[in-house]
Image (cartoon, rainbow, N blue to C red; front, side):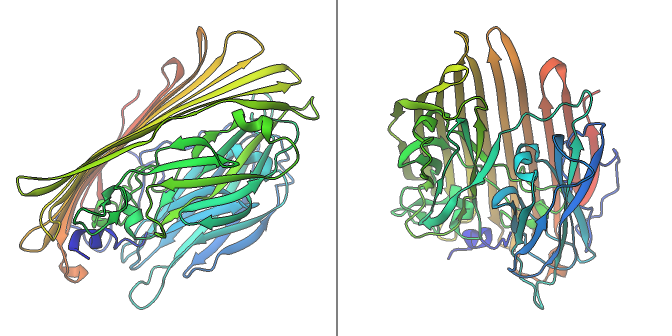
Length: 542
C-alpha cells in the first residue's frame, strides 16, 4: 500500500474540565508530556435540585474483554427526574493508539467515544453527556456492557483506566420532570449483512411517535475509517471503492427506505497520520460521538399490530465485503396513554433518484477526483389517536461535494476539500390547522493536506467544521432555536519513520465552539495550543 493512506490507517483509535484563561510559555517542540486533553464544548447544565450519583463502570481496559455489571437506579433519588448526566473519567500512561469504545445499558447504546493518545508521563481526561432521553431505560435495573478494545504488550503499554458515573437530578419544584419517550427499545435479533445491520422491533399497540437513533462510525483503521478518501476502482489510488467516496446512512422499515443521512467525517486522535494534532484538542465529536436521529412516525400505522417488524441500517457506497462500519441502533417510543391501539397508514413515499458522480482527471500533473452526490426523501403518514387525527411528514435532503488531489504513485502530497449537507424537516398536523415544524440544517466541512518532504518530515494541515441550525416553529411563534458551530484548525509536523525521541514534533491547534439560542443565550469559547501546551482559553460571551 502506498505511503499516505498507509499512514492514515495507522491509527488504532473526552471532555476536559473547563480551565481558566491562561497564557503559558510553550516548549520549542513536543516533549514526553503535554497538557491533559480537553475541548471547548460547554459542560452539561445541571439543575439546582437533589441529586444522586451511581458508578456504573470501573475497569482497566487492556484487551478486548467487555466490562459487564448490573445497574440499579438510586433509591435515594427515585424518578421522575429532571435530568440525567453521564460522566466518564479516564487516565492512561505510556504508549497507546487511540481506541473506540461504547457503552450499552439494557442492550441500548447510550454513549460512544474514542480515547486520546497518552504521554509517557500520563494524562487524564473526562467527558460529560446529557442522557436524559434514556431515562425510561434507566428507571429499572439493567445490565451494563462496555468495551474499549485495547492491545497491551511490550510496545503498546497504555492501559485505559475508566470510570463511568450517572447522576440523577430529581424533579422538584420548578424543576419539572423531563419530557421523554415512554420506552427505549433495542433491536431484537440483530445481525450483520455485509455493511448493514438488520434487526427487529415490536412496538406497543398504542405507539403514536417513533424515533430511531444510529451511532454510525467508520472505524477500525481500514479504508472505511477514511471513507472520504476512497476513489472509484478504475482510478489509481490505494483505497478503491466501487463508486468512490459518497456514503449515505439510510434506515429501512420492512424493506422500505424510511430515512437518509450523511455520516459525520469523524477524525479520531491518531488520525490523518499525525497524533500531534490531537494530543490536547480532539477533533469535533471525537470524545462524544453523536447519533443520527430518524423520525419514523409516518410508518407507525403499519407497526402497531403486535408483530415484529424489520429495521435495517445500510451504508451506501461501501464495497461488498469491506468491514469498518459500526451501526448500533435503537428506537424511542412515545405512547398514547388514552388509547389501547393507534391505527393509521403510510400515505406518501417518494424516494428521489440518488446522484453520485465522480470525475477523475490529471491537472498540472496531479490526480484530481471531483465528486458530487445527493438524495431526497419525502414520507408522510396518518394516525388515529385519542386526541384526533395526526399527520406527520418527513422531508430529507442530503448532498456531498468533494475534491481529492494527490501527486504520483506515492500519493504525496494528498489533499481533500469536502462538504456534506444534511437537511431534515418534520411537519406535524395535530389538533388544528397550524402545524408544528421542526427543521434541522447540518453542514460538515473538511479541508486537509498531508505531505512528506524529501527529508522525511511529515506535515498535516487540517480544518474541520461541524455546524447545525435547528428550529421548531408553530406559526407565528418560534418555539425553540439553536445554532451550533464547532470549528477545529491545526497544523503539526514531525520527523517520520524515526524513534519517538527523534521526531522533533511541533504543532498548533485551535478549537472554537459557539452555541446560540433563544433570547440571546450565548456560549462562545476558544482554546489554542502550541506544542502540547494550552496558550489561550477564552470565553467570548459576556
